[in-house]
Amino acid sequence: MPTAYVLLNSDLGSDESIIADIKRILANEEMSYEVQGVYGVYDIVLKLSSNDAEKLRSIITNKIRKIGKIQSTLTMMVIEEQENL
Image (cartoon, rainbow, N blue to C red):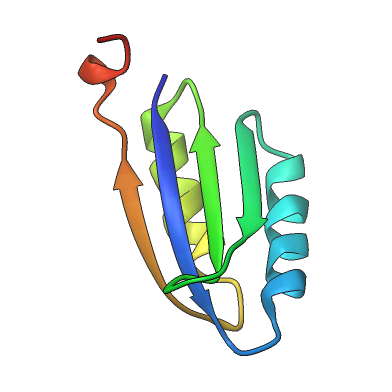
């Protein structure tokens, strides 16, 4: 199943509102996700899985990355061939 990890940097103090926005956006999509605030270089980690790789890319590019107060993102797509090794 196509899976992506998205690491997000946000404006100071905006983590909770960004997480709420992500949950609101993904509530209407047919995909599984986990989103958590973290300590370290990045502020939020998002894991997305969908049966449709193109839909996954589209949501990351056209919805998640356009949320206000996000400074930057780093997206890592899982190598599907290695999932079951």
